[in-house]
Length: 247
Image (spheres, rainbow, N blue to C red):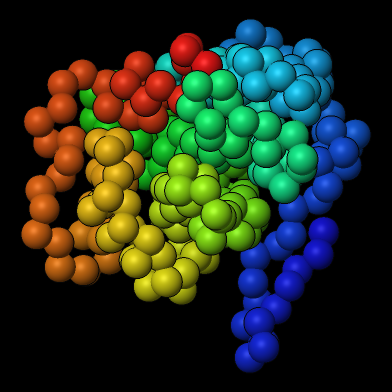
């Protein structure tokens, strides 16, 4: 695993291993999913590289159920997230979704954001408030520790030429920078957060931007976009639409 450094010697996040290495070196049988061990994950992950966007989106949806069912982040989420982040620059990530004309890369980034949100302090605190004792934080520790590495994979797409990809990368990056090691990135991301808050049509994305800016001490005149939203407002809710039909 390589580590890059800045010009002033400040250590940066570790580079992701190649996705093929992640697949080859992961002991899938030892990782828990919502339906048992991860022996069947390679077949699902392979479908992310198919040229058919319907197949790709269905695979992401299935992965969400396997490693993040009902907002519970299972052990297999860590290697799966490394794989998904590792193929963001793969040609398969440029497949356009019919009718939407949006690269599948945006959906992959939304998937990473969804999983990061389910392992965030905000979600853990809320779950503990409403369902005391139901969480086993150790099972999501591996994913939470990966957040600096995942951020490094996501960051280049903050400048993507496609607006949907830029927004998805921004939301993922904002959620991932909750990790203390990424505190130095927050000032840079504040501009992205303001753009999302001001221009996004997605209330959850605006909520993420609003919450980050507020937590980082920035002046925000808007109210929390989810303040009046009913029901489940997380990124796996039916309102998001990235991982459900129509494709």
